Image (cartoon, rainbow, N blue to C red; front, side, top):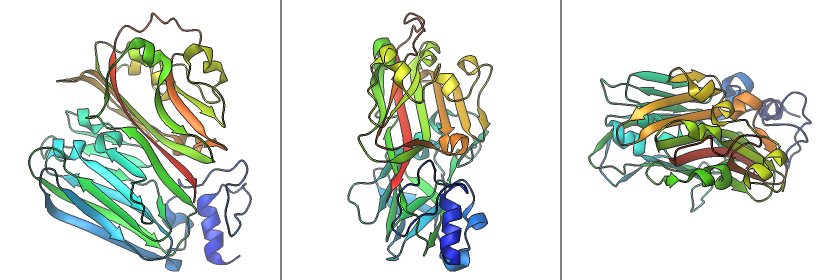
Amino acid sequence: MNMLRNALVAFLVFLAAPVLAAAPAIPPGAAPNLFASPAATLNLNQGEPRSANQVGTSITSGSTLTILNISPGVPGYVDHIWMTGLAANNMKDGILKVYVDGESTPSITTDMNGLGGAFMTVTNTINAMKHLGVQFSTAASAPSWTFTYPIPYKSSVTITFTNIDTGTLTYYSDIHYVNGVNVPYKLWSSGVTILNRSLAVSIANQQNGSVVFLNVPSGPGWVVYSQITWANATNYSFLENGPSYYLDGTTGCAGQSTWPNAQYQVSGGEDYFQGAYYFQPAAPYWQPWMMLEKGSVSGFGDVVSASLDLLELHGGIKFNNGVKVCLELPAGKSTGTQTTLADLAWLFLYYTPN
């Protein structure tokens, strides 16, 4: 095996995992080792490191800017996306889309709220996990994002940003990518933007599995990121519920009756995100595996927006043949503990073999 293949194996697989074959499949019991910086695990002289930038580009209301569009005809991956803009609401509501290998429907679609919950930030703050960081400056009204989950491609990749709010956005971005390296995975999203959020979700539907965050019917992969925003609540009792992961065809998402069957289950929303009771006493708050915004926001009531870097925390949640993730009340809790409706928005990211 040549130097590049050895470096690629080090990049993709834990040291204990089997060596990838030329036509790779997911090694049994292994997760892709994507946390390490490519500079630390790849000999980039074997690839073609490149960058693409936008410097003060104007994006008028309703317009879409292509921030990366390359067709090298060889495999590679986007290593790093940084972006900011001189209009806070336009940035936070803006829509990011990623198209790889000529697909007509983007494999990744999200507003910027899905990447860290910055829509509700009202003070100067920095939130940072291993693979995602958000900085907000009230003085400049210019939130910025850094995204480092690798985005692999086989031959081409296009990334766009759409300004959906009124007014013109002055936009900046810095994207790094590497050509000539085969990363045999694809990154996907499943989400609902804050502007398209599910409104006034009933207490029953927050508890009984009706809210489905992610549904991959079949095939293997890893869930590596999740973000949930609860808004327009009158208190924080919605945190009595949390995401349940049903793997490999396990029947579930029926509330407390099936919750014990979930292979990855939690005792509450704040527990899932590794936080204290109802995320007390304060936010923003962050660790290498989570970040949190919480408070009362004009027009949004009581809000929690929490993100979890599952790649950093667990190496991803592995599934062999499908995964379904839904919101449920854990068995043993009283259904009467929750006393508020809530709006819901979310973003989940996952890798599959490619």
